[in-house]
Length: 205
Ligand SMILES: CCCCCCCCCCCCCCCC(=O)OC[C@@H](O)COP(=O)(O)O
Image 1 (spheres, rainbow, N blue to C red):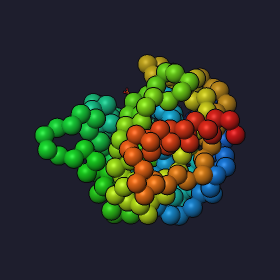
Image 2: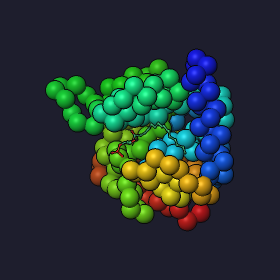
Image 3: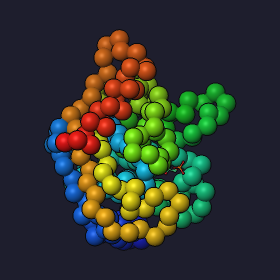
Image 4: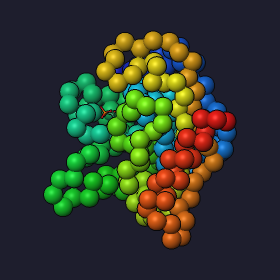
């Protein structure tokens, strides 16, 4: 990381701690240096910063957020913050030609990185997350050794909801749950539903 990216990272971590308290609750598993996919509900850009803030520093550099290419490359600043500060992996939300949209995620997992994925694919406004897209199922099939950790992000939509640019202070937390494993012959729809329920169940703990 160059000094500008380092400064931005420190600034955002500080800002999110100040605005939200950034409480991390490792409820179903501890932070651990094993290959993981963290998946969570998504309502605000600050969601990612909250998860980022929860990770011990040594895990942060090998844990890469998945960012929508269309949105996060739309300006130089967005591109810079996602690549230089967060080391994000871009994903195409629209399938183009024959290319597998998951290929960049597969490459990252093959090189040993962990991922942070928002399986709804977009920020939501409702209390309940939207249906999960199938990427997480395809990755779970292909990488059975990677540990899938659900997380519930509490309250962050009130800090910086979609469409807002000025954050307001509200106490927020992120709760990490027990890992979810794909069943040997579990159907796609069943798994996606179960993964979504695992995220929502953490709202109550
Ligand atoms: C209070 C702190 C404010 C922090 C702001 C800077 C945060 C930079 C975070 C980089 C986040 C990269 C991961 C985002 C995952 C993602 O790409 O989700 C899609 C949405 O994004 C945009 O799509 P949409 O919700 O459909 O507009």
